[in-house]
Image (cartoon, rainbow, N blue to C red; front, side, top):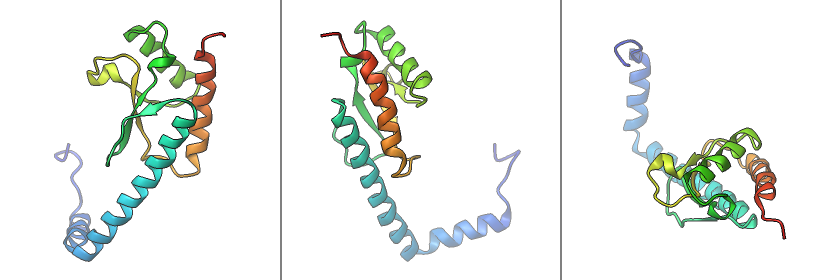
Length: 138
């Protein structure tokens, strides 16, 4: 794509200057790492309160959530039906595990890094509404 939309020379100089500033890079990396940790902890804790487990992570831009208890039937179709509810009812877009070659149905990749801390409760509430529709009648 750079053939058609190359980065301007002034922008290249600015980015080169930023990346050459080791003090800035160290500070930025530490700040970013802390922000990611806070967002991960908030998101995973919110899911945990809904009974949704996640794999433990030491870093990254997303988490793997086990929503297998919410899918009926327990297969790829059930997973895609849940994905459809999350997309069209909750208005959140997660990635079904089958799209990432996950062999167990019900796993979803949830990216939390595009959210602000204030967004987390809103997203968790939207997921809760879908969880309630998936619970088996007692």
